[in-house]
Amino acid sequence: MIGRFIFIRDGRLARTAKIVLLLLLLAAAVATLPLRLAMGAANASGSLSAREVEGPIWAGAAGDLRAGSLPLGSVHVRLRALPVFLGRAEFAIDRPAIPGQAAFYAAARGGEGWAVIKEASGELPIAGNMAPLPVRALTFADFAMEVRGGRCVEASGTVGIAVSSLGPLLPAETFLSGPARCEDGALIVPMTGPSGTEKLALTLEPDSTWHADLVLTGLPVEVSAPLLDMGFTGRPGGIGLSASGRL
Image (cartoon, rainbow, N blue to C red; front, side, top):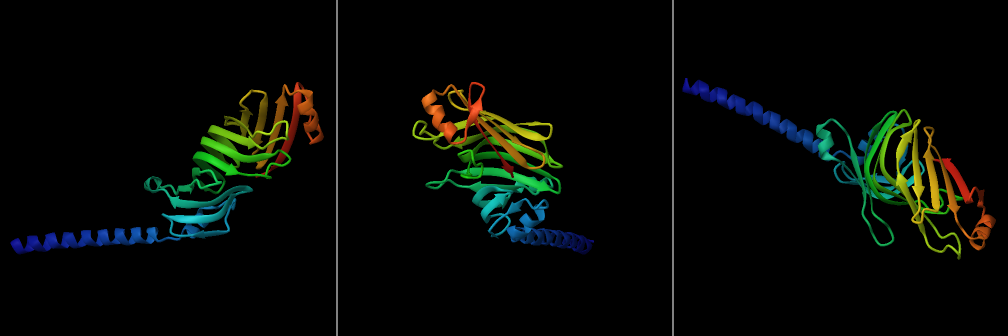
């Protein structure tokens, strides 16, 4: 009887050991999975591109990563552990601050026809990407957005832009920002500058086209006249400049 008990107990230990060994093997396989393969599987829409992707899924890197036409730069990319237990493949994108480059962080997941971006904070340099608007960078503060079927269904947080100098009479960089929201499937961000006389309306349509309209009010003639020569046009109470493109 004692011998039989020992046999059964040892048999149970053997099965447990096999299960533990299998789990360890699975964990090791996942831990060494190349980030390139994981990002390729998650990039069903083909909107992500990178010059190079290297490293394992838990601690990889992507060089010159772009989301559509939006440059994210060279970033660290890793699979977030907690969402895995919820059945989600969610990636953390992190670009630490270095001299001449501001930090940026976001978490993202997606699939065919849908995408979620959350916890986006920091700055993305986009000089020239919103021409003729002289925008140097996009800024984010706890920004989140959910897209389904190409349409914005939920958005929150703050989006801003940094407008470069508009000439010797307006030499300082101007920052405008505002709350993000969804409206009729489009992402809408009405932005205001520090003095309240600078306003910019940014719209990202479901077809990935964007529109931006900058309006400056209350400027003296000696300041507005050179800007009209630069391409600004007259608007009620001020002058403005528009731009559009495709993300």
